[in-house]
Image 1: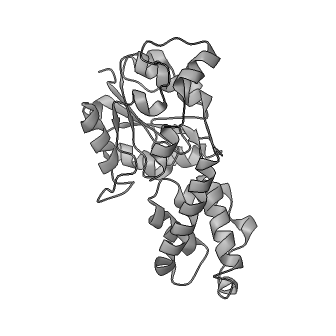
Image 2 (image 1 turned 90 degrees about the vertical axis):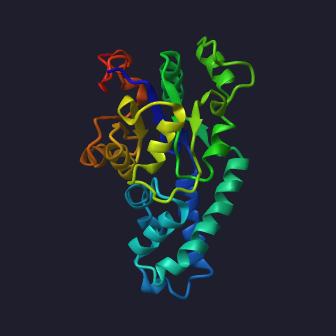
Length: 260
């Protein structure tokens, strides 16, 4: 059976977003100001908030769940109660960074999305982030294809990444977050494909687990030197660039590395 649908997470897959920076800076601000009285009760230090901590503890989770996970990791008292304040502080910072265009789309991801769309697959975006659509509507595909010397009939002047999606469930409130498969099952349903006909592109272990729980193949994208983490979550294929995925194998319903 060949694939009929491809479902993409956004942060870390399609976009090099400033989420990690906003989370890190938000916690630093709180610890230096509003929460300075409890700082000595925690294990927190700015240098301990590493990309590995973000990827392992927070990536792919809804805002307040991610906030709580980070606070629990650093042993912050009353983590559940403080999660909303932390999440709200991060949201203010991320909006400022997005409006200042402090992000960019990954070229390998745009090449892959365009190639997959051109091959006839239905394309969906499925991110837990409330900010995902703000990124998608700012990524100009018409400018990208011109810069890359590409030609696609489905990319018209002014088109953004949001314009070529067949389904988009990003930022919705689901009853259960990843690693529950609800978000990906909904994306597949709205794109008109069955779970077994779709693959998911994810950079977080809980996202890979969600794909597998939904009976979908999982393509793990290790941009943060976390190949083993994604393999441990049972990704069907792990790559560091989407340029490394075989388009020929996709046409036959397999996730394989290209021979280039």
